[in-house]
Image 1 (cartoon, rainbow, N blue to C red):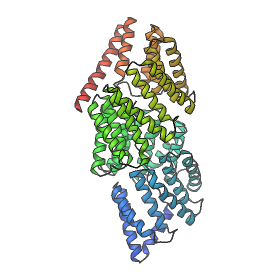
Image 2 (cartoon, helix red, strand yellow):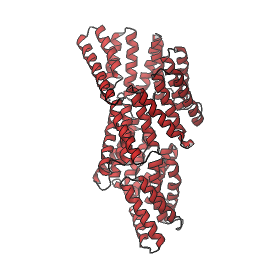
Image 3 (tube, one colour):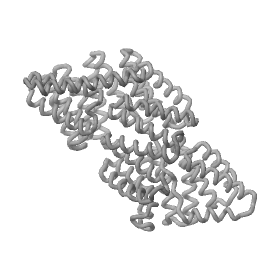
Image 4 (tube, one colour):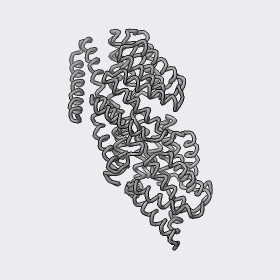
Length: 539
């Protein structure tokens, strides 16, 4: 399975009113040095606010070159470090931002004390960089302390709480507490909307995190709407040709890929890539992520030549970058392998997938989640080649690693059971297939809830197995459940649903339910016609 990539973005860094006043007071100094700093600082702020991060970084670095000559705890140095940290985090990721934000936090603590609002804002900024770097536990600890201080000082209804609430939502998201995360963001949204147009970036940050939470929870229709809101805000408030707009469009395209609406995703991804290139923002992680998602969309639209071209472009781009990009490079190798598999170039597909697996093994060890995913993808490749025994061995190994990492009651383990069950059904090992698929349904129902589209897929796999055994009444019930969940999740018209509706229609005909069968066949035809029209549109 190609990896769909979530576009990384950061919220605007927060500066307290007291800190703003102290920075403003520094402009009363008459030295040429202070004047130079003030000019560059103001130019950086202006560029940042209009979404021109490249220009903002240029002026922030010029301001920093002056500020380093000030006292080590000068608040002008802190302000410059914070702003530069925000810019490089948005443009290039967390690695360069972390030391800047850590030093800024030290200055805030020295000036205002550890339990001040200014220190809490600095902690929240640094926690954001930790989240982006995948250092989740450090981020959680820092964020929780920052939120506690901020709420104690500001009270529950101050708009300055928004960045704290937004980051707290990510903590709950990564703990799989999706409803808690949603409630935090609803609280932040209320504060942001009450603030009106004073600070559109706050509202943008909230919608960005709504999209992230809904996507992680599988509520992809809500994630799509959140990213549409974000894209509209970014374009309206900051302009069409800004990094924020490109990132929002890229995230929208990624979610549409998740929903299997590949034709709908493609124009958003193409536009995002065009903006990245025109504003010269091709060195950050988000440009490559959009390329990878575009390749995945084109693969499913049958545009294998274009998919291969974009997958190779992502690889070439990443191979020029530091070793810190190895994970993204492994994703690209994996995705290129999927392209070759669809093209029937099985030897090349195996080579690229093994390459991805070996790279992930070097990064996270031989029993990491990504290694398990690559092994599972190799199993799927062998299924295509009808090498069922070899495929089974790889599926079992992937399931073993996943069980070890995530446990026997995890959605990740259920995904591997689903693949095994489908394989057993293809081999007509119906008892093994049913037992394995029922276990996957049980796990998904318990861990994901009864509205998850992943549970819907599990129901449909079990329905297909029961149909193969001519247990029509049971199959009909699971087909209905799976289609209902899929419909409620907004995925009824996804291209992959055409084959499901075909099999459902066949079952209905076998049960002499001709009208229902005809309706299902018509829906399947409609999906195929739409898919063909959209695919031809983008050839």
